[in-house]
Image (tube, one colour):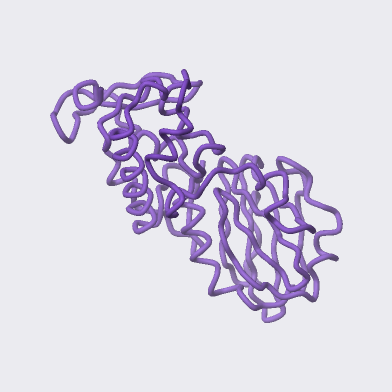
Length: 272
């Protein structure tokens, strides 16, 4: 699943190609994603320009000159690419955002777990946005924030930091990597971790996410950037996907366990 670094990579990639441009049309080939694409999406956007291209959590936000916002979520396997108008769509290219200068932003989603919606009220009030926690790379996110929310929590620390109400955008890959960097076992109870360790963990989350953004995200299966090219952070992964391989720090064997139905990777020596 594309996580925060992949969505941020997409956001930064498409912004210079579409910001300020005017919608000519939106071609919808398959409207049944996680939720149906609004039938009037093209009519609502046509003739309006894009005021801004931004990201909130794992959502791409295209704000239009009509003060509406197109919300795009990449789901489990989606991506957005800038393509030539003459390039024929592939099997899983479900939506084309066509602009008056000929630029095309193409949405691809093999498993169709993503979504494309239209917010007509201020984006902060939308049901998908209004209850989200702070951005992990912002000044509002720190160890004190995590420590305060963790009081009396019995959930695992990995599940706790993956909960978007606590902090957004920390998915399975980067939760595993940040916990390894902070030397915290992923199954430890969130409510039994000291403030000092939360301060360290918050800093590790910031470091891991920024490193992943700098390397264009992680491409394990489907993710590609706006030019159709993969990210490279998978080459830097310390524990994720490395079951039974040697720890890069201590040479012991990386283990895999299930936490909340998700594969979790850790070093039993480095992480306590």
